Length: 223
Ligand code: CTP
Ligand code: CA
Image (cartoon, rainbow, N blue to C red; front, side):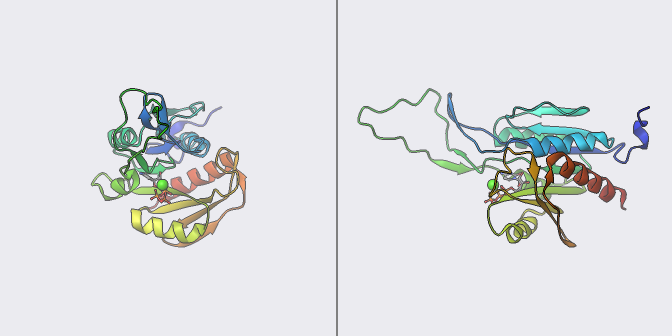
């Protein structure tokens, strides 16, 4: 028989997860995106729900099935993700796995951009998107435990530690995406906290997810 929900370690907790890429429109038919598949974030949301948590998953455009027991909110742009995150608060913990587009076009064209007769290419003027994690860290609705991810191709640990401090996250989970991690089914992560760094072996993304969920449950048990 299934375990009664109340006895599970995350019973009564609300946890917010962001996942996937964001799409930033250039015109009605084109957008800026990145290679995030959403797999690691969806696996974390599913693992948190399995441990009894109430999970809100704010997801960018991905081709994935919603994990059992997870409330999913679909968005496209970084600004929509920021609004959805704000609307989902309060939460006991937030795990920001999304690969939020750093830039959007200053103004998306309302009609399809056409090729010019003289073959000059259009110039896209970009502007920075809001930093959802950093904003949450500084807000008066900051979850008790705030976890960020960092996808890096070089100097992984140094960049992760800098990010943890700059963004005001409790933990940064760093992964080296110089290989085929993005879109793949395995991940090698480093857990960077105020107590130092713990490096995990390369493992399936759902195993990484359950270990992270268990660690979150343990952290929320303290104090
Ligand atoms: N993040 C966010 N909002 C953004 C950008 C990033 O919430 N606009 C979050 C991500 O979900 C992740 C963490 O911040 O949890 C780190 O994202 P990352 O892209 O590695 O950091 P950046 O500050 O954007 O730095 P970089 O120049 O390395 O991309
Ligand atoms: Ca970024």
